[in-house]
Length: 414
Length: 77
Image 1 (tube, rainbow over the protein chains, first blue to last red):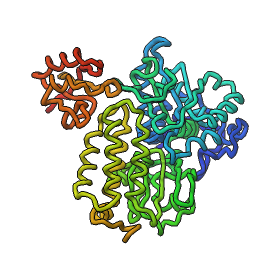
Image 2: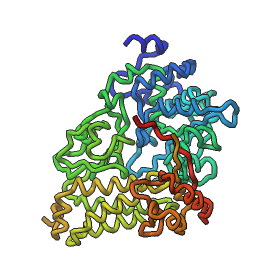
Image 3: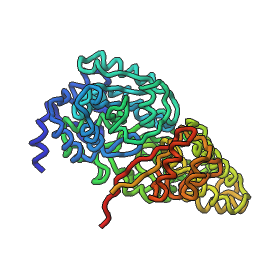
Image 4: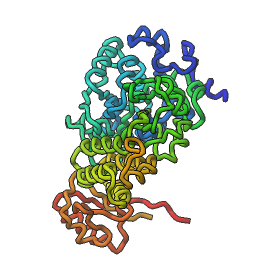
């Protein structure tokens, strides 16, 4: 227990207490940032910081949820001796998910924390080149922040286009290399060979902001809120019928009902909640006690992911809502990979026939078959995520699927 | 122990079908003509008896969408 205090030098300022961490500075400028958090401890050895990150349990906040220390350690291990083989770190704030707003809010309100995390990640991997990739509004905020300090002048900024797959890790690398943000075929992991063939870390901006806090205040502080399997805090973007994308910082492992209640959603009048965004899964309204942790969400086929919650009011048909999302996802294919280009529209249209009511009893099986056909067969995980979402629709609204096959709807035509 | 694995670059493949002729029934065509191996996605393990045909498929793919990779398999106890 005492090893934490020994490996991390004591921070110059008191750590934030409670759940308000990432926005604790209260303003985006450098003076507020330094007054609240103190300077970033750039003197930590790679071993110290990696050890602290491992003990913290911090995982990626862009969706995949990969252990942060492992990602950084992999790039460090793959580093070669020359500038041409030195690692590259890319802060990813593209946030192509239309129901997510947390990365934009973070970059606008706490850009210095993200920059600190980016520089710490560069130091720990031995990177000689650092990039930040996000939408134009966020970039303006980051540019202002960089102008306030001398150590971040080398950060190269890139504007991310606003579509669903533009933030996928290989699309980010493509965007920086070629200016075209589409996923690419990968035979080896980006941590081994990414940008220009160099070991590359693509890390979500929220993840980097947490790195900046763990480096200052340590793993034990990070874990002092949240649960064992979902430690620390995480940003959530919560929306519902009357609530448009509210961003909150929440303790890890918060029950769904509490996260929804925190933004004023009436949890007694819901049909379901989409957890993890459009590549996530529906959790029925009967299960709102479920916590936002990998363990509790696993039975539903999703994860906290990028922290996206979308509440579906009780007056909406879950199947009709899902058809809209499935069609959107089909249209967001980068149109490179045959199974995705052909399979996603086919899957969405079979779901639409099912939702229209009175169709063949074989439609659900046809949806499942198409989901299996597309899964794993693309340069990126867009087909997999879309298939997972569509399968969760059949599960979460199982009784309504039967109702629709019988020609009625539990919600709109009971 | 190592074995060969056939990697499909979906961004290059346009479903010409040559590989499915050389490597059937390991690879079959899906309903749009793209190669599919039961239970696998972009990386298809190739049994020893198929390795020569897989090399031909890599060499003959008109879209250069295929590659063979050696993968280490963990030793089974």
